[in-house]
Length: 224
Image 1: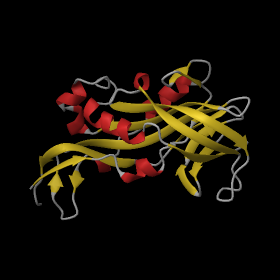
Image 2 (image 1 turned 180 degrees about the horizontal axis):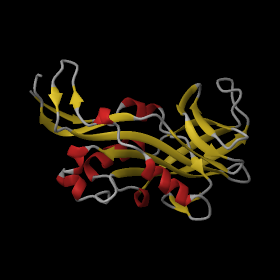
Image 3 (image 1 turned 120 degrees about the vertical axis):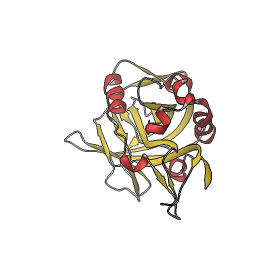
Image 4 (image 1 turned 45 degrees about the vertical axis):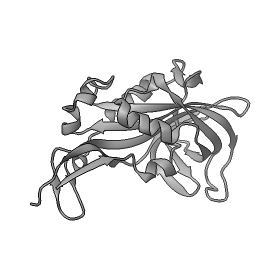
């Protein structure tokens, strides 16, 4: 059996606000301004782990596709709650490559070849106000956002990175953040907790979501 995949998955479209978590500003195409935790953002990206579930694709009929390129998908946002009610920061769609992806020519030719993961990044703009919503009454920040593709924050191979850019660029919506007194932070899309992990304070938050697998290109599958 031979199959082909080119998917970023519906969950990306539902929760593209990959809830922010950083006290950095956003300039122009979304490049973060090194006045806050740029190092923390970079370290968080580097710490994202590869899931063994994303090493080998097994379809619904039990076919095993050992050479399918793909990886572990994360969504992450760093957001700055600026004075005057504006927001800045960046949103990241992240792939931690599996072993077949690391060996693929497109990965080797991309800007992510040496890191083991790649990002498609977007600058954040919009507004925030204190408090939550009917769906998230305990949240501390309500955000209206729009994302704009940021080439300087993007190094995924152009074929699937471009598809992600086209699906997310210019999208807008609402997020709700819960920043705890102990420095922990979480993000919600209405009542859905899409980013259960993060840190934050009165100035901003860095948050990231649950992992998922994404598969690209094509390969041979065998029935065990």
